[in-house]
Image 1 (cartoon, rainbow, N blue to C red):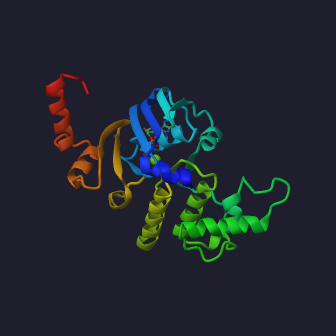
Image 2: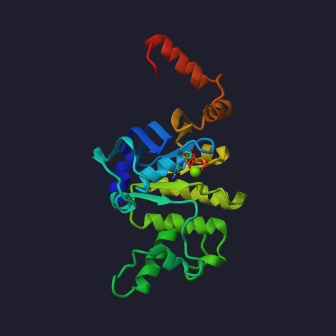
Image 3: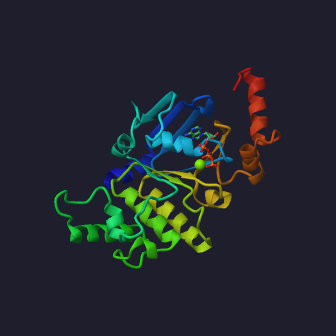
Length: 268
Ligand SMILES: Nc1ncnc2c1ncn2[C@@H]1O[C@H](COP(=O)(O)OP(=O)(O)OP(=O)(O)O)[C@@H](O)[C@H]1O
Ligand SMILES: [Mg+2]
């Protein structure tokens, strides 16, 4: 915890991607991607359908292997060859389908796959740990003995996020966490994301909802057709952001790029 606080003050660089590419046969899903994620920040990853967001998350989750470029984790180059490798390093992912077990209760779902005792489940200890974590996150779950099937979409998302925090990752990636939620539940999940950031984790948030993104993101990274297409903040204008996402030619990003081209004569 102390470490997490220190890391946050410094905003320590956790993840650094350079020149990341991913080919699926003849299809180029990602090309020359740059991305930095620091401790205690929310980086939103936005872009149109097929922009490469999920592919990038899967590369970082160890599900897909990049075909070009380097990934540095805490200053060291790493190879994320399996989901286990990514998890062990401290890169956790909440995939869009959540992968919760409907018939099991909250505690069982939190500890699925990493039960406290390998021989006999220590139910009491797991329940205490579950309560403590959910309370730290100020999560609104009626009872940790409630089966997942009886929880709302927002509560399920909360359980999935809490589960990913049990291994105390440095980075947590959320793929469309509010896509299926109503207004109140969305607000709850956004609050949760802020608390996760305040604990010093770096958060990568994929979302199609610009309001959500503006509400919580420290930086907004736009992907378009598998490439970086600008970095924005909550203060950036809506028009600029939408233009970068859709690739409209006349916007401040393209103008800035054009100016840079004039000055440096550089291709980029
Ligand atoms: N397993 C795969 N095999 C072949 N092509 C793939 C595979 N996964 C993704 N692609 C292609 O890579 C590109 C990027 O897809 P990706 O799913 O990353 O987009 P996305 O930004 O997540 O889109 P969405 O907003 O629709 O979820 C698309 O052209 C897609 O067809
Ligand atoms: Mg996707």
